[in-house]
Image (cartoon, rainbow, N blue to C red; front, side):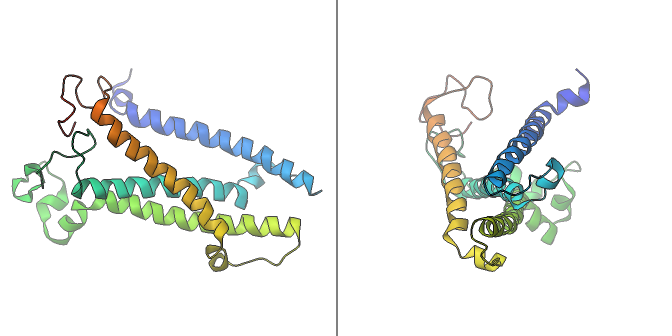
Length: 219
């Protein structure tokens, strides 16, 4: 295996799976959407045209929105809250790690740490900020895609006039879509937090070592 691939195998595997499933989603979504159009006597779309429809855009960003909300929220919550015995929690009584003290910076430390000031303040919170910014962008994408899809459905079914994105934001349909994804994401993370107290996965950094007692906290 080439060294670059070996050094980045986990990211390559995750993003490789992402692109495969994204492509499959687009194909099956295209077929499903054309079936819906056929029910109303509308002309089918070709695959490239489907990729710009509200049907596809809404489905993409509706899921991304919940994923990045969950990850951003999780990063923030684990900075302040503890779950005794969980591999997903920092040890009880630990506030900041010694390595988080900028006075311990070395020439190899990232530039914001060595510079200090505002760059350091931003950098100290950059992971959560990045995840929550992606969530915000996905939320807007979901809103715009959902508005387009809602208007398309209304035009096919009843010929109703289109609504604006702000009007769609106030519908129960939009929030139902969001909540059904948000609740499942936090359920999954909460389950991992609790299961990691009692269960193990040999070799995974997401698990405590097999010999660790259930009450020990942190991986």
